[in-house]
Image (cartoon, rainbow, N blue to C red; front, top):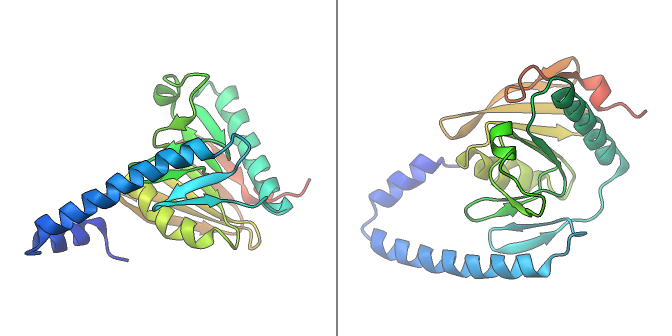
Amino acid sequence: MRTHSEILEELKQSPDLALLIKEANLILNENTAKRIAFYNLIKESDKAEYINGEAIFHSPVKLKHSRVSSNLSSFIINYIKSNGIGGHLGIEKIMIELTRNSYEPDLCFFRKEVADTFTDSQMLFPTPDFIVEILSPSTEKTDREIKFRDYAQHGVKEYWIIDPDKETIEQYELKDKQFELLVKLNSGTITSITIDGFSSDLKHIFASN
């Protein structure tokens, strides 16, 4: 997949740049109208996302997926509370609104300075500092391609991709608006780079009890 910079450079050299921008603006205007319609359509109980002009409704997750999400979220919440770090951990039903798309990550963490600005009635949220996506067959391609690129371009500092079947975690760090793989683990301890001092043994994240 070409980088953001490569696409921009190609556009800069294109003789029909003005026409492309005009057509792109029409697409974005249509996208905005459809996204507003999406917000009006969805219910609080829906697990839904708006991706590249389409409303995506997700089916219920498997037990293994839910178990990993529950384990990891509990560890993170306990850690940030016991260490007075502050911030907010969103779990599955936090909708983040990026420039074109709206996502509900499995887990997302906002540092204290950002979380302190949130209101109790807020339903749309800015770019998190840290996102975790737990793979399923229906979401893996999106998690590894569209979201991977979109999260990086919008400044997500840390991205974990968890495979609950293979029991692996890939940890990515943002560098120059692109994610770089730090580690891919199937055992041992993983340490966050955005939640200061937080680490967890993979056997506890994937534990069944």
